[in-house]
Picture 1 (tube, one colour):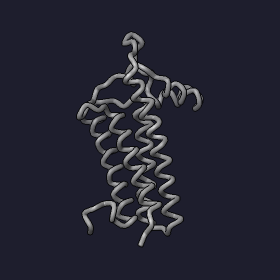
Picture 2 (cartoon, helix red, strand yellow):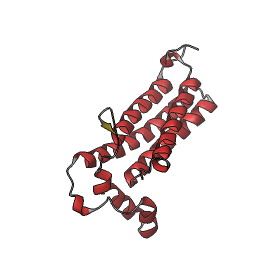
Picture 3 (cartoon, one colour):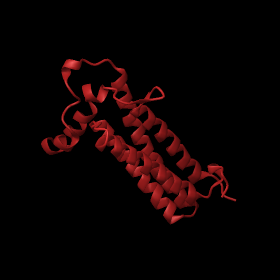
Picture 4 (cartoon, helix red, strand yellow):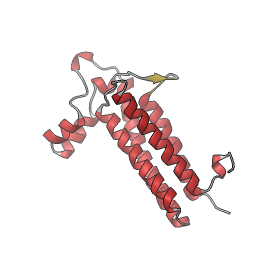
Length: 169
């Protein structure tokens, strides 16, 4: 196989996208259960976006559709990436905006919010959090976790669109 991933067939590109999403989720689970970094509601929504992308990458890679099907899978992956990027940008905004440490955490966990409030109220509370959601407890190469998520959303979403819409010979 050609070492250039841009020259790979659609199936290989989409299965590689699935592997990347699976590795990102594996690392998130490692961070949570081995290193004790509890995810805030924003982190959970970002995980859900990666799971959605991974599912569409896997199904697209196993299905190996024709031209129209490739475009549908590309749009579905890009939609999940766009949603995840929006959450990551909001999370970065929280991290970069000074917050009052006396205000406490970003609130209760997502499972409590969903149990205690109607869905719309729970989502609103999750997205307007501060405190823990704004805390920076992980940095690699000067970039926080939501920053890296944003980079992966952009790269994977663009890669999915490129693989789905490029002309095949």
